[in-house]
Length: 199
Image 1 (spheres, helix red, strand yellow):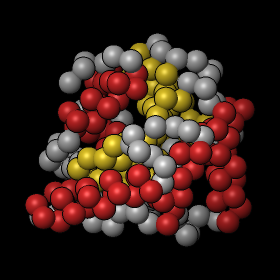
Image 2: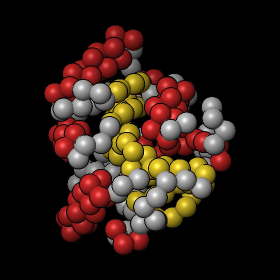
Image 3: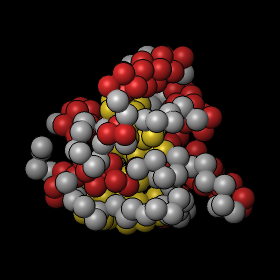
């Protein structure tokens, strides 16, 4: 592991576009449906157990959370999408904020889309892939909770999601299996982040 990941620290949270940190350096954002293990993935990738707050309650992340790796590189935890109990007004707010963040943030170099390996490609996941393709932003998919799948099921999930990436106009998008519990796929995720960060 590049030691810079272990130096990650919480930087700030933003509820509005006007509250975002300066648009410089390089950022990589993590997006995904509520409760797919997005915060756990960030913690596993940095090797810092309590960095991103995790919860059994879906919809816990309701701000854009920024984590600094060093002076010019950041990981960004986006609010989980698709949780019905979030009030409609807040859903609309985040739709506008995320659209502007993804479209206007010049320092954003890629989006890690986190999906549950057992239930990938829900409607909102496919919308996110298509959205990123139009901007365009490169996408890397983490199929989390892969420890809950057998070998044949894992290969099928990879195949299905790889096809979906191509269909969404993300021919250069990548996908991998990931398990925060077992540490599976952490090095592969580092490889993608290293490329996007220019390391």
